[in-house]
Length: 256
Ligand SMILES: [Zn+2]
Image (cartoon, helix red, strand yellow):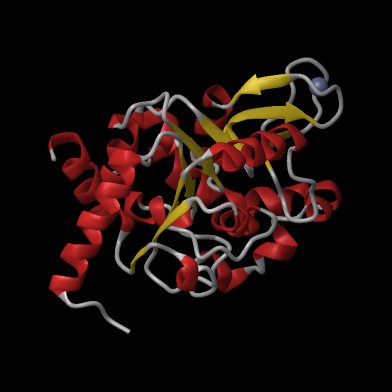
């Protein structure tokens, strides 16, 4: 189902009105907000990262433990894309909103919300900004290790004990970070508006947050390229590129 330009214009206005009147906003962001920055959605079929390896197998905790070099081989191009990526207008428009009013719950590991200037970002799948030693658990900033890894394939090793450093991202088969999940649930319980931005809502438990939100009577805006299961219950659905739509909505809020 495609939307006509008149319908989209009305939807943008409706979304802006909801955002203008909201007191607490939770933005649920996913891969779709970072693909315009050149970062592929490695969980989606059809991206280059699926061609040689199956991510659910190679990007799993089990592969990391048993064949770390396989994981790092697969991860290297993705790490390079993330390392060189810049925030796009969607990240920037969210960062320009009043920070005290907006919490971002992201499924992305690229740190682009923070780089754009957003302060309150809850990372459900961890981050590539830090690495932890699998042996002594010492934590490191990624930047000194990532460049040699991306350029030469040098596997990052602990300065302390020579153990293998694991990016602090949540791999398949790994538990979600409890603290982040509690924080996300708490933010979702308090919000009067949730914006789904560039996620098809296929990964649990994050995908369940919009249901709880609309069940409480809070408002919901969905901006995604493809339909989601919650569209039927949303106040506004805009099926388009989030990097175009979000700035369009926030501009109306700031100057409207
Ligand atoms: Zn160590």
